[in-house]
Every structure is written in C-alpha cells, then in structure tokens.
Length: 259
Image 1 (tube, helix red, strand yellow):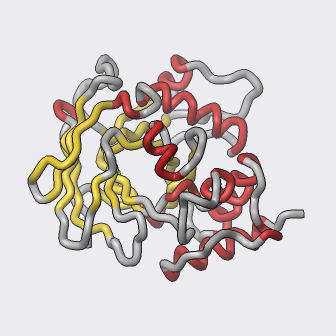
Image 2 (cartoon, helix red, strand yellow; image 1 turned 135 degrees about the vertical axis):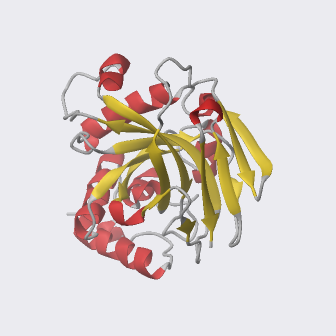
C-alpha cells in the first residue's frame, strides 16, 4: 500500500526548507490522479494549517505544456500561504520565479460530492464574491516538467504564495470574463496582456470544472473557501525588488512586492 502520509512528510519538509527532490520514493509515490489527490489531502492535514481555498493549474494549453500534463489539476491553498493586497512576497529559493494573474471566486455555500455533475448555473449560484489575485507558485521537485500529473497533484499543484484581494465591489456578474482584458505590470511597465479566454476558454467554465473535480476527488467545496481559476496572462518572470501590479480594468488592480 502506498504510504501517502510519508509522502506528505517528505513534501512538507521540502516546503519548510525550500529544498527539492527528484521525485517521491517509489513506496510513497502516487500512480494516478486519484492517488495524487489522496497524497495532497495528507499534505493539507499534516501541514498544521487550515485550507483557505483552492487553485487550478494548467488551465491553458501553454500551461499544460509548461508542466507536461494533459489537462488541468487542482491544489489546496493553505491559510499560512495566503497574503493580503500590497504584501511582500518572499521569493527565496523559488525555482519557478513567476507571478500570475488569476480570478478567484468565493463560495457562499457548500458544494458536496455527488454523482451527477454540477452545472455552471448551479456553481455560479453558490458563488458569493469575485476576488483579484496574484499567484507566485513553486515546486518541491527539481524538475517539475518530468514528474507527471499525479506527483504534481500531490505537491498541491505547485502552490506556494497567493496574494488575495478583497471582494470586488463593482458589478461583475454581467461581465463576459472570457474577453475581459488583464494586464501584468512589473515596476510600472506592462509586461504581459491576456484575457479570461486563457482559462479553459472562460473562468466560469474553469470554475465549473474545478467544482466537479473536487466533487470527484477532494470531498467537495466548503462555504467560505475560494478557488483561483488559472492565469490569464503568460506568467511574468520576477526577481527580488520587483513591484508587481495586475490591472483588471473596471474590476480594479492588485499589487505586491517581491522580496
């Protein structure tokens, strides 16, 4: 039997020391998507932190090629890795060294596991808020392009730091987020531009995919949690000292500093 508790110990130790492994030892290595989520659940339970929310990784074809997976994957965002608007984000020995612009949806009610897939209308009816966010991901593997989806899922889908803004206080339900423009700025200069189309064609489509993935593998979604739906721009390379700002147009801006 695969020892997912031991796998969680290994991954959490590398989180704590910002060190890397080539891959998990064979006795604790997940071999399927489902087993990857079992290991990720053990990471969350053994972390000493609560689960604040979730993330989707690889929602674009480019993102899937970047980490060498054939579809999106999800991971938990721990409360201990959550930062507020304007925060300083420690880069340290981060090997990915990028910042990403993501829509985040907050849930007002539970969406528990069930056999019938949730529809987009059902999912949106459970959403209470839209947030702006900046993700600074990382991996606990020396080469995250080689370990495969199951091990990436176990490692919380390359989660590290998330800067989460307050709930957007402007009308957003009527916006077509698939064409909503997003700009990424470094030190005041535009470095990347994109739209919500980069996120499985539409952030709301990605949101619905996430809820059904969580229903199948992760025990569903709880009221009070959120999910970031993937980067709308090509990830921007960052280094210590950089000021990062994401312009979401009429929805506002969010910023942080890399240290």
